Image (cartoon, rainbow, N blue to C red; front, side, top):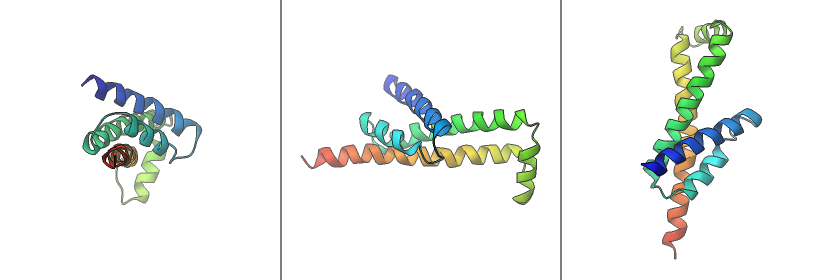
Length: 118
C-alpha cells in the first residue's frame, strides 16, 4: 500500500510538471519510467496512472473552469450536443487518466517482459 501511494504521488507530480511545461502527450514518458521502476503488475500500474492523472486533470480543469466563470466550458459543451461543464471536466480527467494509465502499464509490462527473458 505504501509503494502504491508513493507511486501515485510521484505520478501526480511528474504528470503535473510535464503537462505544465511541455506538450499534452509529455506525461507519457515519466509514466512509462515510473511504471518501469515500480514493482507493479500492469493492472496496478494502469490503476495508479489512471487515478493520478484523473485526479490531477479534474482539479486543474475545475480550477481553470472556475477562474473564467464557466463560460468556456459552457460554450465547448454546446459544440458537443449540449453537454454540461461538469461532464466536460470529467471527460478531460478520463482521457488524461487513460493516457497516463496506459503509459504506466506499458512501463510495467516492459519491465516484466525484459526480466522474463533472463
